[in-house]
Each structure stands twice: as structure tokens, then as C-alpha cells.
Image (cartoon, rainbow, N blue to C red; front, top):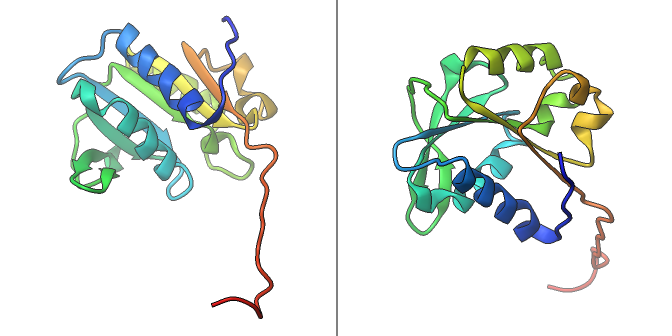
Length: 166
């Protein structure tokens, strides 16, 4: 794998969109995102926005439970949102979110490797923050075709004293 460096939200989304285009995803192909409920969902929806113009079918799977797959749909004036199912899976691209590698998550790197093997011919992408896949030791077992590792450092918080202002 070659390393490229980007900055900001476009540095996360542009390489993802370019990759999806490069592997030939078109109208009707399916992208399936696997992640934690709540924490990964907004990032999945953000990634889905980046490729919405390709008209691929996009799906969110909580953890690795494919029986709970939900469509990701475009909501006018809102953006891409996880919506109702059921969905039958036929992915051309699997996207594994880094939240699955966080401590105390009920998902192992071996389960992800085996999941990818079940979807023959599908590409495998990983999207994480703060080197989560590396820190969790997943890179020796899960063979990502694309890995996007974003950094949220530093996070600067400024706040007004609670007793002042409107």
C-alpha cells in the first residue's frame, strides 16, 4: 500500500469517492458499511454523501449482524440517512468502520476477515480514526484494499463561562 496524506473532511471524503469510482461502482451496485450504532452511523452517512452521485445502493449493518441491515437513503434537505430495511446483501464494496475495533466491542478481527471471505469478489475498505485498526492489531489479519485513517488531534474546545452570555 502507498501512503498519501490529506487534511480535513475533504481529505477523508475525496479519496474515498475516488476509490469507489476507481473500482467501478455504478448505479445499482451495492456498498455495505459495517459499524457501531450511534458512533459510526454519522460517519457512514457522511461517506454515503460523498458517493451519492454514483447512485449505488448503500446499506448500513450494525456491528456485523447482516439480518439488521438498513438502507441508506437520500432525504431532501437533510442528506443521507439510515432508513428502513429489509435489505438483501450483494456488496461490491464492504466498508468496515474503526469503531468495531474499539475495546469492548463484540467484534473480532477474525470475524471481519471471515465476513469479507463470505462476500467473494467484494473489495474491502477500512475507515478509522486515530489509527484504531493498527492499535487494535487488526492489520495483521484484515487485508484492506483501501484504508483511510483520519486524525482528530488536537481537538480544541472553547466555551463561555456558564454564568455569562444569553
